[in-house]
Length: 318
Image 1: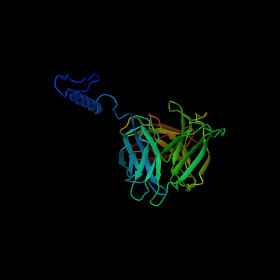
Image 2: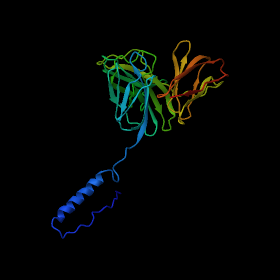
Image 3: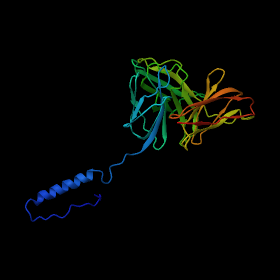
Image 4: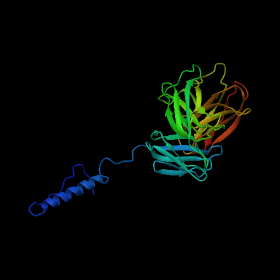
């Protein structure tokens, strides 16, 4: 039956007794039809894709965990990666369950519609562990130590934005989180076009978080001004990270690691072109490309001289 905004009741004869009751029944029927999917008021609303990687605190990536968001769910792959498509932007909550872990339920920030929303690395605790660690910190500029306002802080899949004082605070994080070389979050400050105002800052915790109280205070977290060209030579390692099956290559985290010491030198988050670049002194480095829902890749590169740049391209597969 077709619906129409101008639907009116069919003509009914008033000459028969009980005709008023008939009219009332027809009016009720029309009202019911208006409620069953006719016209406006329906629709699923805007959606976005959600990706991330699940780890167990103190252990490796978690396979076969169930990730549930907005009434949808999926399983993590062998690398702990997951991808949920067409999730309502205001889903509000993320839940992770699985064998050998304590269930994790935490708030999910509003999603950006029509793009892949990368939650980064999300850690859960093994059976018997707790989510009772609170964290605070202050984001500052590395050159002036002035507070950085409106920085986006992503920590264990949760998001908040710093205030004018540069401060942020998260509650109910996994006890024992940190103490390794895997980033637990990322701090970014971009303009409206996605161009970094300050260099992206991975969050690495030197010491595992303890149960609260007290609050685990991360102190001052410096963000550096963007690195520009260096006179006298390129001093760079560069390349492109493409994503098999996609045309938008944004959101890949490329990490540059000192091969000799294992220390992270810098990180770069790709835009839609997938391009990345580092300005470094000659030496041997490991370049690692990570994107939620795709298999990570890495390769060693050697910059032998300032005037001999190295290009390393990657193609990540789901």
